[in-house]
Amino acid sequence: MIIAIDGPSGAGKSTVAKAVAKKLGFSCLDTGAMYRSVALLALGQGVALDDDAALGELARTCTIAFEHAEGDPIPKEVILNGENVTADIRTAEIDKAVSPVSAAPSVRTAMVEQQRAVGATGDYVIEGRDIGTTVFPDAELKVFLTASDEERAHRRVRQNVDRGVGSIEYEEVLDDLKRRDAVDSTRTTSPLRAADDAVVIDSTDHYIEEVIDEICLLAHERGASSLRSCDAQDA
Ligand code: DC
Image 1 (cartoon, protein in one colour):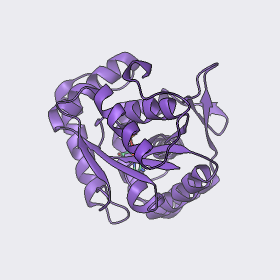
Image 2 (cartoon, rainbow, N blue to C red):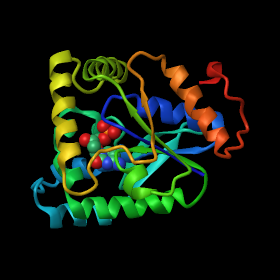
Image 3 (cartoon, rainbow, N blue to C red):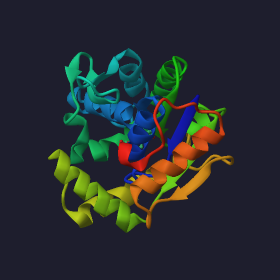
């Protein structure tokens, strides 16, 4: 079973996707981390961010893997060509570079192919922008998770403080979220939008645990048989 969780930056997709996967006993795939990894390679190798052919070559030839910490079923480490880049892909520099990189059609073709191959191996919660519309249009459950711009910026600042990477200036983070939303929503290939059959959840005024429980219930209704109960305290 595939659960697609799409939505703009900072809507809480990562937290929700990981918690839902844990409760249902599913694996979890963060497709944003894949685009960030290609952006990191492009910056490192001096590839122009509007050079579709060169970016596509990077995307096709790199190896992106996710590693689990001991005893934790949810992958948290991102390994790019054998190197741990978990923190390197969360900097403000990558926040800026990832929009043009993820708008490159040949990068998207390569990433979508890899994402489909991963999703074909089992039950997955997959988070991104185009999972329900393009990558897995037949996903059993599609969620479009959103929140107000201001709430998303506050959450992103808190996340950056916790992680110790990325900007912690509210105005800078808010501006960057709006800029990325605009690029992600207007690009020609797979723009950010809710699939027609997606369940739209606005998390602005809800505790994240409520959102997690709602998605777990929807998953159960659509046939997910979980090993764990859908109890918010498990998150
Ligand atoms: O979810 P995130 O903020 O880590 O994503 C980083 C960027 O990658 C974001 O600007 C949009 C892009 N992205 C995308 O275009 N398609 C996806 N499936 C996932 C992310």
